[in-house]
Image (cartoon, rainbow, N blue to C red; front, side, top):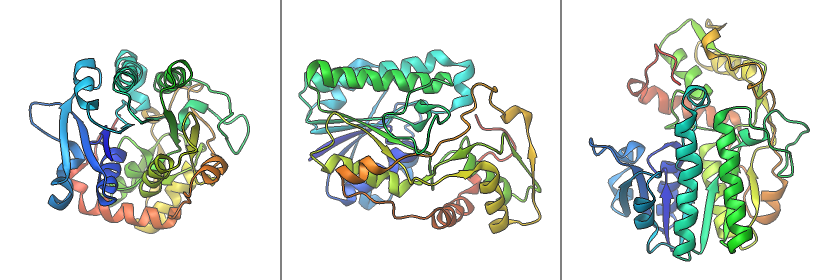
Length: 325
């Protein structure tokens, strides 16, 4: 099977590309074009992996490039997106263009080329603050940031192509993914890099929100398990551990592991607007476990240890002294 992975130069996309190659799939990796010929995290993968990857440079907002990328593949894993919530507050237009129109480009091209499977990547942020827990796939949607609103829009477009045209779409909805290669705009690498850099005051936003954290290898295996099941077409499926931890508790655990002398301080710049903060995310994983063979393999403790090791070895790639949007 030949598959296209959009956003393959990013955090989850690079891990998915790597794992698909290991499982014997032919992978075409869609990376964001730039004049430096930088392929993001794919540049860090081994030669043994990359020799089996066909790299396609383009822009998900460009329907012509997307059309070319989709030709000749059996399935599309669509991960390309703008994902930073703070950046979406002042640049919402770019989120509409990338997340909604980019997804439309994928759906249109997949429809024209009779692609056998299409996987559109959603986010737990579409649910907003939990109205009940655990959050299953029937939970109401709430756009609490321009980012989440555009992901809701992309999801509903994907649903419409399944219902209107019979396009074999699946909406894959990971809860908060973390692990090696994640950018410092996310909370776990933000905490770890500050600690590894020797900071005694760890700057964070709100400490009370809870999150359901997936280690990246579990998230990637969730994608592949959903792909390999014939029961998942037309479905929306959470990838979740069904366990939650507050940001404050998470920070204290990382402080304990790295530097027990460090303290947490609230940085006003990092606080979301009050009505935009998602206060609780705890996902239900019953559906994915019914439809696939997927089971989470990594505890939070194990995942954090592996993430710390990676960040320690790659600290020079992170800008510790600024707030990364």
